[in-house]
Structure formats: C-alpha cells, structure tokens
Amino acid sequence: MKKIKALLLIFFVVSTSFAADVKDVSMQCQKEACQLVFQFVSSKNLPSFFQKYDPKSKILTVAFSETNFLLGDGTFDLNPTSPLIQKMKVFKETNKKVSLLKFEFNVGDLIKTDKNKIELVKETHFMIVLPKANDKGWVLSKKFKELKKAAEKATLEEKKRLAEEKKAAEKAALEEKKRLAEEKKAADKAALEEKKRKAAEKKTAGKATVVETKNVAESKPVSALIDGVQEMIALSSFGLEQFQLVTDDKIILTNVGPLNKQVITIGLAGPSKSPVFKISRSSIVKSIYWSSFGLNLELQPGIEPSVLVRNGILILQKPSDKKIEGMWYWHAKPTGIHERQWISTKSTSSSFDSFAKRLEPESKKIVSVAQTFYLRPTARELIVVSEETELYAAASEKSQVLQRVVFGERLVSLENTGLFQKVQYNNKTGFVYKRAVSFRDELSSIQLERLKQMAFEKGENLDSIASRFEKITEDRVTYSSFGRRDPFVEIKGLVEEGINIDQVELVGIIWETEEPMAILAESKNPSISYTVKEGDKILNGKVLKITSTDVLFLIQEFGVSRRYSMGLPDKYGSLK
Image (cartoon, rainbow, N blue to C red; front, side):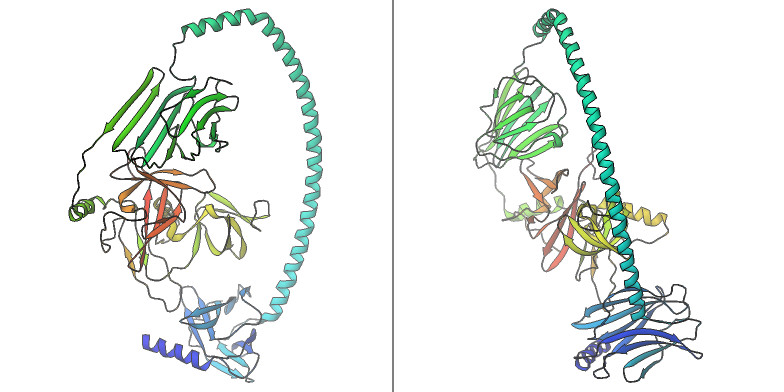
C-alpha cells in the first residue's frame, strides 16, 4: 500500500508541474443523470485528481494536484435538502511536498461511493457523473455573487444600526450626567449638614472621650510591635532570604501595591500614622510604619523581591549569595523578639551511583492523569476552558460581541494576536481572550475529567489522551505513561543548568495577574524555590501553560517531545 502511495505522489509531481487552474464549479441534472462539472481555464496541462468518499461523515472529497481555484478558498452552502450536493468547502493543502486543491462536498443519501464515472467534455470541462435526482442545479460563480451582495447589504444595515445605537447612547449619557450632577449637589448639601451635626456632638462629648481613651490606653498591654501587626519573621539560609508578615486583618494579593520608591504599600485599615519600626536584622525589609494609605514596608536599597500572599500572610523572597551553612531565624511577636541559629559545619558526600539509586524511586510520584508524546504534530484545535466568554468581532473588548461561548466549545485556531486569539466558530471568525481557551494537549487533568463527564452525559465518545489525525496519509506513534515518569528516559541526577522538574514540587500559583506565575520548591530542600512564567526554559524543555490549578511542561529528550503536568495539592495533601 505504501509503495502505491509513493508512486501516486511521484506521478503527481512529474505530471502536474504547471497544471491549469479551476475557473468555476457547477452541477446540472438531466433526464438520465446529474453531472458535477469542474471548468478549467485551459485545456493544457490538466492536473491529476482523485476522489474519496467517507460514509461516516457523508463527505465526498475531490482533489487536484498543483492547481488553484480562481474564486478563492471558503465554505459555500448550496442546497441543504438536496439528495446530492448540499455544502462545499474549498481549501489548499500540502501533503508529502505535493500541493493539493481539495473540494469537500457534504452529500445526500444518493451518493454512496467514490467510484463515480468521470468524463472530459469540451477539453476544459472535467465532469463527474452522479445519480439521477430532482435537483435544480447551481453555478458557484453565481452563488458567490449572490452571497457577496447579501453580505454587503448586511454590512450596510449593521453600520446603520450601530449609528442609531451610538446616538441613543450619547443621549442616555447626557441624561445620566445631568442626573449625577443633581445627586452630587444634594449629597454635598447633606454632607455639610452632617458635618455641622458631628461638630456639635464632638464639642459636647469631647471631655468624656478623652477620659475613655486614657482608660483604654492604660488597660491595653504594651506591645513590642506596632499596632495591627501580629508577627514578623526574617529567615536566611544558603541561597535564599525570606521575610514574612502577619497582620490583624487578612492580607490579599490585590491589596498589595507595586514597588514605588523602595516602598511596598498594603491597603489595610489601621492607624493613619504610627512610629517607624526599624528591622536591623533583615536584608530585605528596612522598616515598617503606618500611613493614611495603609501599612508601608520600606525595603533595603536596591532590593526587588518576589511577592507571594499565602493563607493571608505576606511573603517577600529573594536569592542570596551569602555562604551560610545552616539557617538563621529572627521572629518578632508582641511579647518580644526571638532569634535562633541552626548552624551545621558537617557535610556528607555520596557517589553519583548511590544518589541516582535513591532518586529513582522518589521520582515516580504521580503528578498528572496522563502524559502523551507524539512523533508527528496534532491538529490545532482550541477548547473553551472558562465558564463563559465572548467572541468579539475585533481584538478588543470594546468591539461588537458576535456570540457567547461556554466551557467545552471547540474553536479553530487561526492566529495569535497578543492578548487575543483569532478563531473560527460555526462559520464565524472572531477573537477571544487567550486565557479563556487552551489547546487540546494543554488541558489540565481537572479540565480533561470535566470534558469526559460532559461527553458521557451527551452520549458521545471523547478521547482525552490521543488526538485525532485528519490528514489522508499520516502515521503516528503514541505512548501514554498514565501519570508515571517516562521509563525510557534515564535519570541524570544533579542538573548543571536549568530546573529539573523531577526534583521539584508545585507549591503555589500567582494567578490574579496578566502573566500568571508558578512557584516550585525542591523536594529535598523546600527552602530553595523558583518562580517561573509561561515560556521560561527548564532542563530539556520549557513551561508550556499555567492554569489556576496546574502547570504543564514540554520536555524534549533524545528527539522526542513529551508533556508533564503538576497539580496543586488540596488542603488534605492530595492532588486536585
């Protein structure tokens, strides 16, 4: 079979180097039979062709080698009720270095084979004889003109509708502006009256307030920290320095401001002003104090640490070049300040063979549902992973919304445009947010399980491991490790450059940013951690995708690509 395919490909290359172009396509029915006619521009250098029928999808494919279609690529609805040709899709495809012009026809019940009779009429009209049917027939060039005219009319009506909507919106905005001005005037008047009332109450109750404040201050125990701070921890070890802060109110990442003039401000309710608490034992934070904007952390000069909020605790971390054999620990509480040191001057060394034997059983931890690698690329299909998102007409959220799509919908990837992905959905071309969609081989284990459940409820069959190949002659080799480490890749032990994902664990994901980041810690030494983004390089690969619960890596070893995912543990220590 492979020899026959190879001979056909050689025949296509030799015989169709300068084939004539297809000018038009039409179908006409007579008393005896119906004919599907392909009209060529010239009778010289007519190309080779083949036809193929797929009974499952009811698609008849006709392909010509090294040929162009003058009307252009596209999808055309012809006659949805016809027993012969209902719909046609035209596109170019390169297979085995041979360019093919393909016509895919969605056919009715009368066409059941690809052994249809062919004829050449008038030297330029290539005809495929179809069964007799009651069909009026069609000419694609005329259909093309009708569709173009209808599209231009729809565009004009849409432009008119948008102009009317803009006019109505401007009128509504003017009325809203007038209403807000009246409300502001009334609010200012009420605020002035409230201010006068509070001033009178403050004057009469001033003496009692002073006495009560004095009593509260006398009853409150003296704290070693400033108000609103429960504890502070500074930690330093070989290769890592860290500072932790715990406050009375829970800290969330969205309330942590950017680094501004060596000061990080946390938007918390507290005193409008406080003394400056100096931290001489921290190489990250210099001092802490309250202002009207919140709690301020003044950093040491030239410091730009990584910021992490976990369980309401603010953590600042940076790599260190200090040669410390052990760990230094400084802990401040309202009751006092404690300092400890764990210093070890002894160290042991082992041979590489003993280290590799110890590492091998530890690296067999299951971190994902399945891993698959392919020796050929798969078809690129995007899947909606958000609960719902909009399909925009342009790469902007201010543009017209064409349609709303929900979790599990399939989209055809067309182009990457920054924060948006250009896609096609149900004959509509538009743009969706890149973070709302994922390629099939970038889905997390949670998303795969949910898609399986949806397919099961609909009575469909969804293969979440292997991708389907749609090309005519495409072989593939697939290997699934079912979540275990690839047994065909030898363990190398210590790495000389890059992060070895066999020796780290996923401990956190910073998600509420434009560019999500993952935090990895070494399994043997959790004090050594790394922060990575999508596209960052690791040992023999890179970070492919970061979701709110998983990180997907692409590993390339010995000319073979494989995907490896890590999931965040839940509160009981199990993988999500």
